[in-house]
Image (cartoon, rainbow, N blue to C red; front, side, top):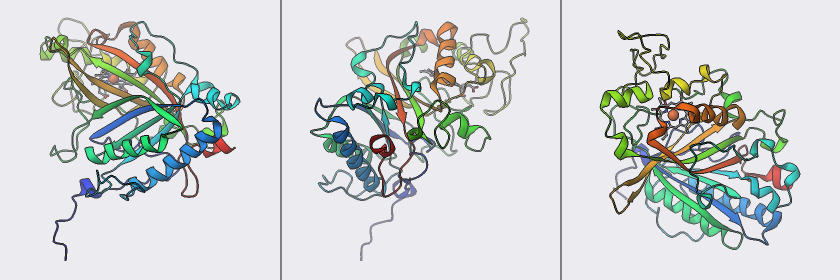
Length: 374
Ligand SMILES: C=CC1=C(C)c2cc3[nH]c(cc4nc(cc5[nH]c(cc1n2)c(C)c5CCC(=O)O)C(CCC(=O)O)=C4C)c(C)c3C=C
Ligand SMILES: [Fe+2]
């Protein structure tokens, strides 16, 4: 007898929590995101951590299926699952807090310092990391709140960041995301249909050569809060902005012509004899072809945390990238960008984290079980 109109596909879309890989890595970017790091309380130990991961996995399983949790607050009562994903990871410090140092992957060794870093340690790293994405803001917040409550007595929030992307249905074409500099961002991401995708993004089954078994089918997430210096950026002309990246703003096509997906012509020169895509253009120097094959899957959210007293926006990119090994992904590319990226004067890396994200779990398990009980 209920004549309420059915949910649109935005509300009714479910992303499975269970599976070989955790959800939220290859899932299409959602319109809302929360990133949060938690630190274990001093007496939590390995047992407490295992119980927390079990609780978190149950909560994530229910919420991603559009079901309520036990002490439901009604925040998301009338919404569908809205493509909710919850992804869990472990930071370097987790292993010493739980007596599991011998199981810590070498890939979690701290990232090198970069000359352009202006990192705030209070908003960096953490024992545990949670990434939440959903196509509805209330659904995303509800998940964050439920997981925070699950953590009570075991872990406390160390830092938390809120992000967004364009809403599903806001454009006629399903285009690659745009960032707050107005660029199409994500064009040259590795694609699941490519032969080397799995090996670039995920640790192989049975653990990699350097990886422990419990990381099989997992991935490493590098998280950077990158402030965009938008007042400076917006002083550039459209043409100057396009030369910084090496691509057009409207279509995302290379400056050497074609469409968004046309490869950059690195050799092409203009009437002045100089390369059309400048030698320090961001898209040129971040390419795997110019970095010994180093590749990463970028899956960022934009952020805006208000304006300061001078009206300067605290806005930018919650840069999240995924790779089977940070030393063959983020690190070499960031080293190169650090040495001479035309984009550098317009951005500032303000926070950083590196997390081991294990493979997905089955309905009778929980994320991280192989680490905590193995
Ligand atoms: C260390 C890795 C990277 C950081 C940090 C980074 C920051 C950053 N990037 C943009 C905007 C764009 N990036 C683009 C391409 C691109 N960027 C990286 C890596 C980092 N970016 C890679 C590996 C690539 C792809 C290169 C390739 O394979 O050809 C683009 C072009 C379009 C696209 O391919 O996505 C834009 C635009 C911003 C604004 C930013 C920091 C705020
Ligand atoms: Fe980039």
